[in-house]
Length: 129
Image 1: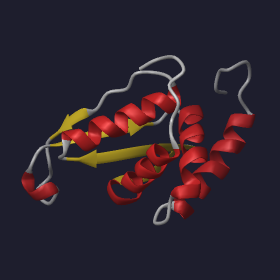
Image 2: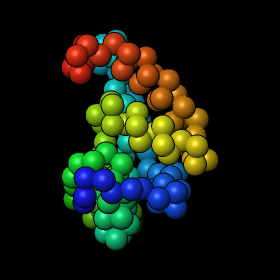
Image 3: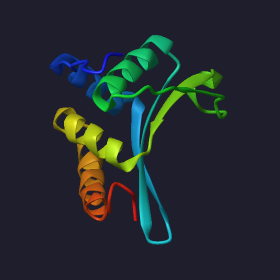
C-alpha cells in the first residue's frame, strides 16, 4: 500500500456492493453517546482481502480482519472473517464515499453520516470530547 494509492470508481462501486450484500452499519448507545460501526463478514478470504485493500487505500493505513467462529445459524457453521471499522472520523469518510453507491444500506448510511457529522463538529484539537 503506497502513500498515494488512488481508489478507482470501480473499486468504490465494488466495495459498496459488498457492504450492501455482506456488511452491516450498526450502532449502540452508551449513556447519551451513540457509537457507529461498519462490519463486513464473509467466508471468502479473497473477498475479505480485496475489501481490506480498498479500505486501506481510502484510509491510508493498514487494517486487518478477525477470524470468527460462527453461531449455530451463521454461514452454515463455517468459520468466517470479519472486518470492523469503528473510528468515527474514518467511518464518516468511508460512508461519505460509499453512500452514493449503496442501495440496501443507503438509509442507514445517511443516518450514520448525520449523527457522525454532528459528533465530529464537537472534536477539539483532534481529540474526541
